[in-house]
Image (cartoon, rainbow, N blue to C red; front, side, top):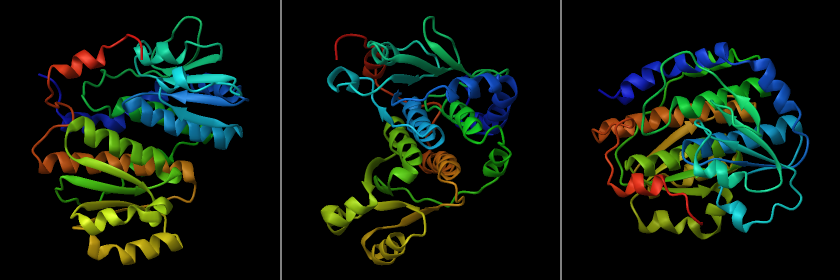
Length: 304
């Protein structure tokens, strides 16, 4: 029988810590430190979350221009000015990776496997592979490997983060999500998981863009709001003014002053929040029911 989300969440911390033990972290740090020029980072599904996080770390740690893109974007967007492409993929062998590498850029792969002709940033585990429709360990393990690079191996904070509790949530058909670049990894996970698991319809707002007309949606609808709170003046104003316009506001409050650590923390908070939302609907993030078209689309490998 396939594991439930309870099995996979119970194993999540162990799988993450196991990856830190089993991976050659000196080698991953060495390879990542060589990325010195403008870089595109790609990923789809759970790996898109990894791509967003990886891009931020390369920008912050390596001091380079780094942007997360969808693999399909590379067909239509010029890569002029970029030197590297880094694809994020747990398996390393999907059509998105193939599409990402269909160019003359220097190629890197953040994955659990190696691909010939590509510079690998490989992570390892000794525990049984996670089987889950929604990627949990397959998302958080590569994020943790990247966090290890960012923190020069000082990852004790990961255990502390796993001990954090998450606020309660109500059931709502539509959740608006108030975020920005600073919490983009977390909101990317939330948006993707809500859609992939069929547990809600997410609408993501940039906080300042919301101030320029997008606030009308809360006036005309009775949605719930998930708010990433950094305790800025804008946050205080919005949380004070928006209470009467939303059915409920769920606040995910920042805990760490370091923006990279905080986004990692808020991503795990978001994972736990989607677990609670799935529970309310008696759904299982690891055993999502889906139509036959899902597999057909997933296996597509033609022109885009």
